[in-house]
Amino acid sequence: MATLKILLYKSNKNKHGQFSLALRITKDGKPKYIHIEWLEEKYWNAKKSEVRRSHPFAENLNSLAKQKHALTQKIITEHNIENRVLDIDTLVKRVKNNRVNVSFFDVSNEQVETLLKREEFATHIDNDCNNKRFKKYIGNEDIGFHEIQPKLIKDFIAYLEMNDYKKSVIKSNLSYIRKIFNIAIRDKVIPRDCYPFGTTYKYKIKGESPNRIGLVEDELMRFASVEIPYMKTRWLTQQCFLFSFYLAGIRVSDVIKMKWNVIHDGRLYYEMGKNQKRDSLQIPEEVLRILEHLKPLKTCHDDYIFPFLKGIDTKNKKAIYQKIKSTKNLMNYHLKIIGKKAGIEKNVSCHIARHTFGTIAGNKISMRSLQKLYRHSDINVTMGYQRYFDHSTTDKALQDVVSFSNAS
Image (cartoon, rainbow, N blue to C red; front, top):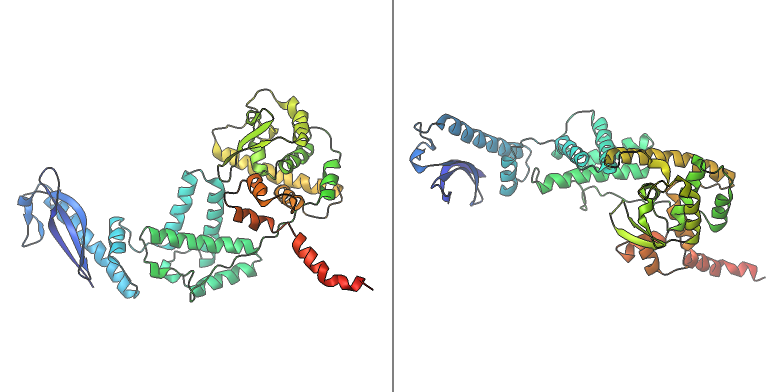
């Protein structure tokens, strides 16, 4: 049980000789103080626990102190009604932030707005979609953190499955809910015992193995051989895909943003958009040929190698993000057509260029070399990624077992 008292905290004194008018919260014998205002000792009435009327702002200060007291008591009562544990640090944090009955969507909306202000547009859009999807399920109403129990989460999953959402989307939604809980716990808005994830009796988010399929050598050669009128959007799309593949599967979004000024002495110096890592690659002959074809579009060293972003305001990060997104959608449309003309049954898209490099690399080069080419910090990440493409060991193992049928 916590006890509250407004007092003059004489252990906290400023350089003007004033003491802290404070709210003392005592719980389990442990006191915590919430500063309200600085006050000279002569203005404090210890018997009545209030600021003397002789102070020019006595009414305001006493009112402010009562509000802090009432706010703290309200938070304590709220937790008692819900039979939830409330540690003193969480209580102080909530009082200082003046946050009572903070709902899930209070914190969630703040997170979405924060991402927008930081200009993290891709994450902002994903988070905003997850936020709206969960709110629609709830009925566009507010909901307290304590109401989000494992049963509600399982019901939400069932709702998403019934509406034919992909497993990756379902996982993204659950991860987002978990993220908001972690933010609320970090900021001491809610106690840790509200957390509905990650224990043996609470809900766990199950992962899903991604389906990563790239083109094999013959398919890539057929793709590159499709004849398309020079400089048309479809031709630029084909060359951009090949440019990505020949440079170890550089993400197409990074290729779209590349300018001629990243090329020096036969090497490519660039920064990955996903993690801002800087790297350098020797430019293969195949890429040099593509660059030679693109040179007629170059008017200066700061031009984009591929003209998809030509004329855009380079300082407008949101406009660049939106243009890259729409460009990739357009490219995916053209890639499907090129894929069909090449007789490729697989779904050819921008991202499959990276998977194609992994597929063709297989076990031909060392993991250390692949780690460098993929720009992974940890070789375990490379090993985990490459296992989707290198099937040589399992293929041989399977053949060793079933080959007896050919012996006769």
